Image (cartoon, rainbow, N blue to C red; front, side, top):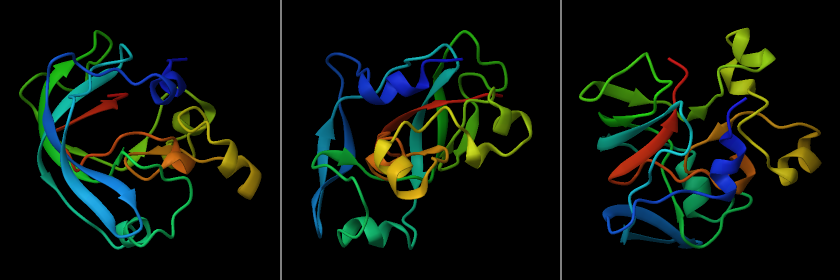
Length: 166
């Protein structure tokens, strides 16, 4: 298995870099701020320069403070599109320069759920103890939706680093 769970605990940021990102600071308090650019943390990761991001109805839960496990400083956004800038050595499905759509779901591609094509049930990408307590299990990690879905930085930013099982 990859070290996807470690990505949340120890995110890697490229030294001396910056991008703009939509950052949550509390109920109805989101700001566009300068933030470091993420880097690859796993051989199966890719780095995507975001060219288009969107807001959906579920973002209103975050904005209005109705979602669990958000922390001041979290980067929002779980849907985006962009151009691949960098790939890990295990990525074979895309190459630098490819245009991609980044789904909200983060899946390992190797667990029993991913092998069945049920990537939103991935058992390896969300280590949230809060979700485990609430629901008795977890589902896949999700970009930019707080720590109950893995704590991954979101795509309403200049770049997003994602695991890609392509």
